[in-house]
Amino acid sequence: MSTHNEPENPQELEKAVSAGYEHRDFDFGKIGKGSSVSLVILCAVSLVATFLVLMIYDRVVQGRSSFMSTFDRQSPSGRATLPPAPLLQSNITAKTDIADLRKAELEAMTTYGYVDKEKGIVRIPVDAAIDRLAKTGLSASAPAAQEATTP
Image (spheres, rainbow, N blue to C red):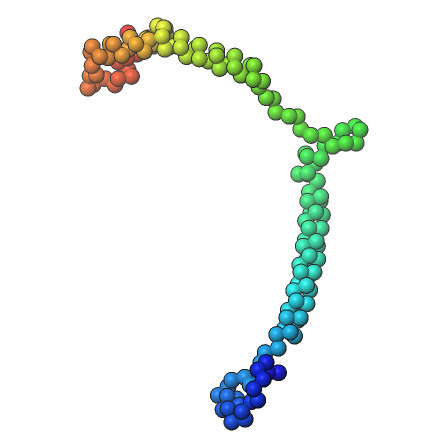
């Protein structure tokens, strides 16, 4: 099935065949039909295989009653019950909680008080600590945190 209209030269044909070349054109129509049919068959087989795997998986998961029973709770009405929802904080209480936290932080940074009364550890306001550190400086033997917290 040649696609060109020129007659084949028998001498050139013989030379091409002896060299291992094809002397006819490729029939793309038959190959196209065959590959499209095989593609459709392959898709159908894949769908059937996927369906079977999912059915087997479904049966295996349903067979695990000890694990799944914790999630498949039934209420007396026969409907499945969900676990309780998480407790969420409202915007109103969140704002007041943040305000209380900021107030406690400000009080801890601006007032004198004991951190541990038994050990004699106190806290001083940040401004007083900065002034004291500026006057005395850091000593090489004592760490800065210990020097700032001792009375």
